[in-house]
Image (cartoon, rainbow, N blue to C red; front, side, top):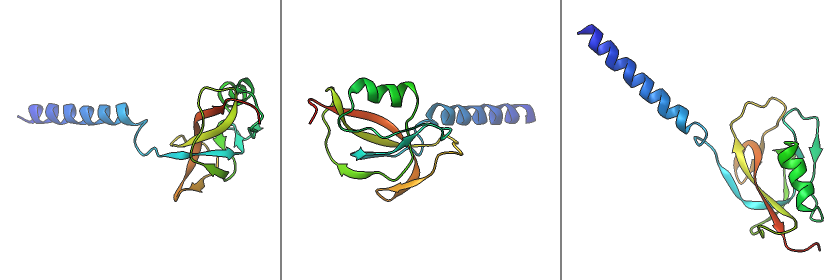
Length: 130
């Protein structure tokens, strides 16, 4: 009888652990839906920095943010706008998502009442440089 109870308990613990492991990436993440046009970013080690400009071409922005992983918020952002134009040629704005990664060199900032460490989750572009 004790063996059956122990086996049932072990199965229950494994099932709960598996459920948390599968959904851990989504637990507690919050996304700021506004776009930030003026943003200072850093890499996880706080050794490389990038502030995308509205004149930056798509290749420049993606090289810095995606390829070089300069994607963590380094300072409180300014100039909030509510729309962006996806799939165009020049930088328009960034959307940020809370990161749950343990990053000792990344600071927390309060945006929209949420204090967290933020990472770029979406890059938006505008059709022309102006």
